[in-house]
Amino acid sequence: MMRRYPLVVGLLACYLVHLSLKFGRVPVPWFFSHYFADLLCMPLLLSLVVIGMRNIKKDPNLYLPGPMILVAVLYVGVVFEYWLPHYWPRYTADVFDLLMYGVGGLGFYFFQARLLLAVGQAFCPQSNK
Image (cartoon, rainbow, N blue to C red; front, side, top):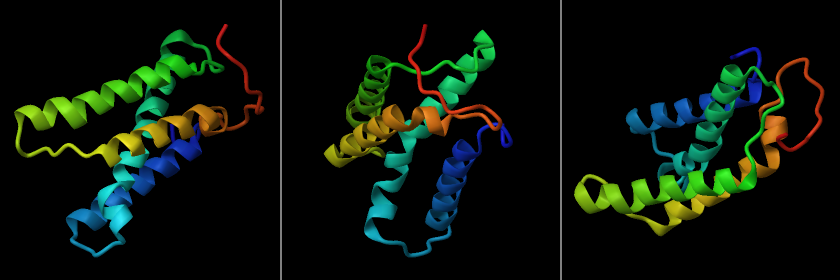
């Protein structure tokens, strides 16, 4: 995966650096401490879904259409911003988290062709068959 999808690995590395700074209690700007992980959530999650689907279907040109991305954003938003905070006090609901999921999903929608471009594959955005 590292050689095939370097941009996805780069996003994952950003998230791991974010986690290490958070758990190391290193002071970071407010946006990064509160919303950076939420912003990266959808691009990382959806990238892993597409990579898995490509491996299962053996189709390197498979991409997620907009409605599927919207459903994923809504699902993650409901689970993490309504359901979990409703039943477990450890979790808190935040409307800006929903906004970050949406921005991440929108970014994934517009950049998935480049984000999931395998090394050696030509850039050719197209919809599913």
